[in-house]
Length: 160
Image (tube, rainbow, N blue to C red):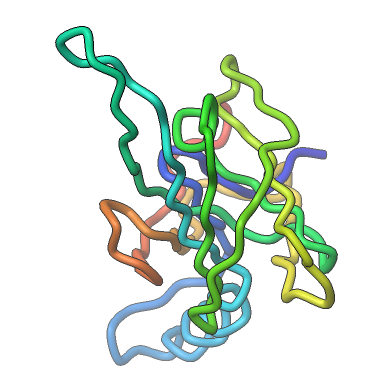
C-alpha cells in the first residue's frame, strides 16, 4: 500500500470524483477540501546559511499535513531538513514549535513532531494503488507562502 500524497510542496491528494465548476461533482470537491484543510500546516523553518563568508539565518516556507492526532506532521526534507528551528501555523492560526524527528533526502520527506500536540485533526490518507488515470484529485498546501491553497487536477498516469 502506498499513501496518497505528493511532495512537490507537501500536499494531500484526495480522490474527489469528476468535478467541473458548478457541475455535479463540485460538492465532492468542497467536502474533500473541508475534510483536509484542518490538517494542513504552514511551516516556517529557520535555516543557517553562509553568504559571503557570513553566517545568516534564513526563514523558508513550506507546508505539510498532520498525520496523527498527537502532532506528527509530514513535510518535505528540502523544507525542514537542516533547520535550527521550525515554527508551524495550524489551521486555527495557532503557532507551534516543532522538532524534526526524521528526514530522508532520497524521497524528500521529513517528519516533524509538534510540541504539545494533542487531539489534532489528522489527514485521513488513502491507498494510491486504487487511483486510476483520469480521476480528479486535489492538491492542498501552502505553495510560495499562500496558505490553505487548493488546486484541482487529473491523474494522468499511475505507474510513474
